[in-house]
Each structure stands twice: as C-alpha cells, then as structure tokens.
Amino acid sequence: MLEQSDSMELLALDPFTGGPFHGHGIRGRAVVRQPAERRRLIEALYLGINRAEGAAACFVPRHGLRVRRGTLVLEFEICFECGYFEVGSVDSQLSSGGSTTASAEAVFDAALRAHGLSKAPGTLDEEREHSSIRAAAPSPLARGPRRPVTGS
Image 1 (cartoon, helix red, strand yellow):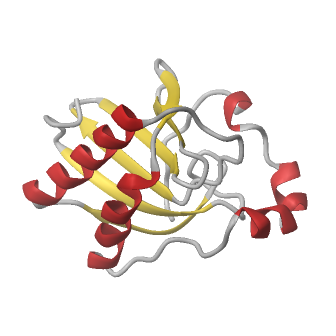
Image 2 (cartoon, helix red, strand yellow):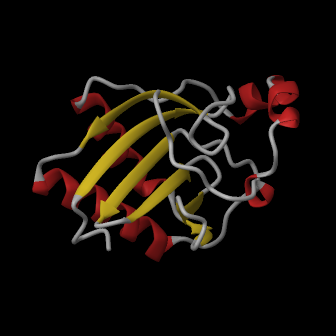
C-alpha cells in the first residue's frame, strides 16, 4: 500500500493540544510529491519497525503520515520517544499499532524541515507537565472510530 500510494502527506503533530488528527493538533502538513522522498520515509518507517524491540507507554506522537491509494486512506501517528505507532483507515475498517525505533526520526525530521515544518518541542517530562491536557484526551487505544482530518 505505501509503495503504491497515489498520494502521501507528512504531518507535524502537536501531542499536547487536542485537535483534528485523532485527538492531536496539527502544526503543519506537506504533500510529499518526490518519489525519492516518499521512498526515504517508507524505508525509514519499515527499518524502524523491523528493528523494534518493544515500546514504552508515553505515546506522544509528533509525526504523522497519511497515504492514499484509490479510496483507501491510511493515517499513521508516530511517537519516536516511546517507539510506538498507530495506523488506521479513516473508515475504521482497519486499526493497528506496533513498535518502531528512533532510528527513523532523523529521516522524518529532515523531511519536515525540507518542507518548512518543525516538530513539536518537548520531552516526556514536558508532557507530564501538560498532564491535565492529556488526561482529558482519550487513550490512543480507546479513541473509537477514526475520522478523516478536515482543515488544519
């Protein structure tokens, strides 16, 4: 699916604010048009998944990826801090998650910068300071149906 996608969009997420991307704010987004850049992102994601040895439990996604092929749309939320990602279709027919590694983060960060975007600053300690915001947001595993993102 990823390799044959009709379109790919890279998102810089704000994990500390509620928002339209599965409960997370969107700092910025960019369409990834160049095949070489798409390949780099896909290969980095796959490499991280293949090298993963488990994940922590913070889930503070600062990176997002949306791919389309025909009518199927997959959306990825990626937290390199804890090494966990979630992927699902916007029609709720598919939802899964898994582990990744921080090895892919540099590739995703470089792609964000190349498009004039930046990831949300902070660390897990900062996220704990914002616990009141996170406490109000539902667990990533109990969010219910995934909805397509509209607006920014």
